[in-house]
Amino acid sequence: MSLPSRLAGLLACAALVQSVGSARAATPLTTVRVAVGLTRPVFVTAAPGDTARLFIVEQRGSGNRGRIKIVKHGVLLARSFLTTDPLSTGFEQGLLGLAFAPDYAVTGRFYINYTRADGTTIVARHTVSADPDSANPVGVQILTVAQPFDNHNGGWLGFGPDGYLYVALGDGGSGGDPDDRAQNLNTLLGKLLRLDVSGATYAIPPDNPFAGATPGLDEIWAFGLRNPWRPAFDRATGDLVIADVGQGQVEEIDFQPASSNGGENYGWRCYEGSNFFSESATIPCGSCLAAGCPKISPSYEYDHTLGRCSATGGYVYRGDSIPDLDGVYFFADYCAGTIYSGRLLGGALTDFRDRTAELAPAGGLDIGSITSFGEDAGGELYICDQEGEVFKIVHGDLTGVENEASPGASGRRLFLEPVPFRSELRLVLKMGRSERVRLDVFDVQGRRVRTILDGDVPSGEHVLAWDGRTPNGTDAPAGIYFVRLQGEERGEVLRAVRMR
Image (cartoon, rainbow, N blue to C red; front, side, top):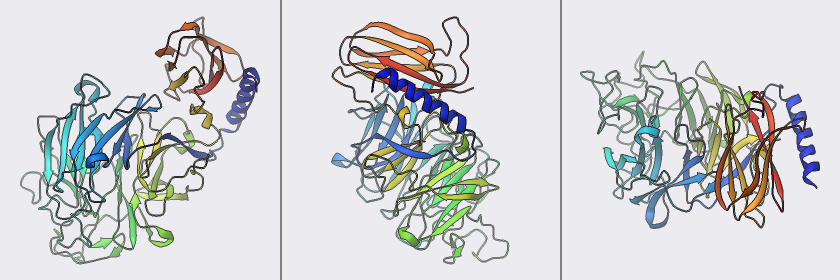
């Protein structure tokens, strides 16, 4: 197909998509692969405001070392951002968590959660080096927690809207919480912690529920958790959603509203989901069955039929690419490889849907052991497959947004960021050799809106930008646009969306 014919077809398709896009909750979804060749990926995230890069946590690889890898402008960099010392080798151990400080752009601080070679959980602070794609290898340990068993380490880290660092810890492992730790306020295991890490080490936020003279360890924010796996804050509301892995019968999704003052008891080991499991001798109210003993019931729970056995927590979608998904929470089951969604209303999960078939990638690919979801700087969602791949959730009719075109003999590639954009669209042009190229922006009627570049371009990476204006300085309206790159041998067209 010639490039003009291809462009006309794309524009016609875009106009059709635009005409039907108002149908609420009708957007078809799929996934596209954004990274492959990883070793046990367990998390994907972005630094605040960083639209060019994704950071992927590899639990444990060569030499039993954890690694953080970078996908930059759609390319997985060979060099790691950070490589740890050798770690413990249990199935649930290794490098498990990563969180960038809200002021990362200024301080360069980020935090990791890993199990040291002796099995101890470590939360450490690192900083970025002078090279933004490389971290300083030596960090500062700010929290150390002994682990009696090699499972139920938790491992999630996340900054809340209050600027404090939250740390999720499992109950210490084995099965059935044999030492009754999750209800015991004098141990950090089976808890959600809340720490002020703005200083050299950590301090206790004064409004933590057990701070000061109140019985219980000052760090604790909530308790009664078995193995919280991938909690997440809703970036729009500040609510916290916690997936807690069950024992042998029930998986649960828990909810904590942004208005919470902390201190919630999510029930384990007294309860597995809504089912009574075992009495506790350490529960603050004296007995699991004591009248008025406070417990937060799950927002949603499911049983272990259909091959399910382990909940993987996700995120509430707040991206711009798929507006009718706004407020939809995605999560999965690790064992069954199933993907689900729902809306959290009044603390309950409603509108439950099985998204597994819909989110199956094309091209003979599949998503198997789902270890984590992730969120980029714009709120778009990703899925980690433990077998070495990361996928992005995208509009099912618009997978052409992803630049899968072959670079051809010239080795030329074009990347757009962010998509969608508001005030400025960055165009990253990677040239394998010197070549004459032209970059134009067209609207959905096929009219040229702006010429960005027309001339000889040397090899290497070049960053250009469209400020969203026409040549006469008029602000281009919100809508769908196409960026056409034409070279001496071949061309390609990428889609962009401008939001207001």
